[in-house]
Length: 222
Image 1: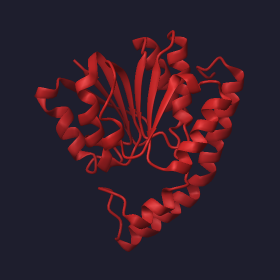
Image 2 (image 1 turned 90 degrees about the vertical axis):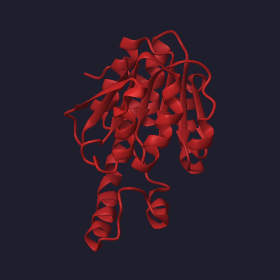
Image 3 (image 1 turned 90 degrees about the horizontal axis):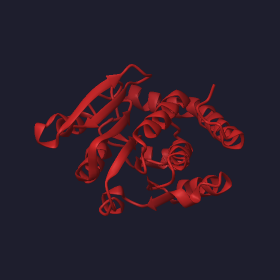
């Protein structure tokens, strides 16, 4: 049973997740073919890969999104940051949790204008726009200002942006705040700069890799 009690919201999310699954074969084929040719680096996407992904829906798997909802509820999260919004599927989970906690804001980040527009349409249809501050553009600029302490962070973005994003958000994490990062086992080497930051004792972070598909990192501000 889904953690979401809003039937209409759950149905909308299921539709979006189905669209994401429908695109997976094409995405896997593209990256698989490039990997076979040896011209692909997981340390960063080149211009061709960026063009390919510009209109692709990238959605967090349902079981991971529901875990994030539960963590936000347990933290009584009121200020959440999402690194990599795409079409906004996981954002809906986060905003629903914030709403259940009594209100607050989910600060989303999305580079592609078309994806941001689609996400905003979903937020409006779900009646959650008032809880979401979607910042469009390069996150190294859009996350320079974060008003107030952060309770929870979801990081579902290409690995080269993981550390720059964490460096911007980390000073705002309140004690006990959590950061969840996706696919940290699958792309462990590409995440190495992110882990260097997490493992630096000066940053007061502790992490554990949860056994979800691809690995899901749970980082806590201690």
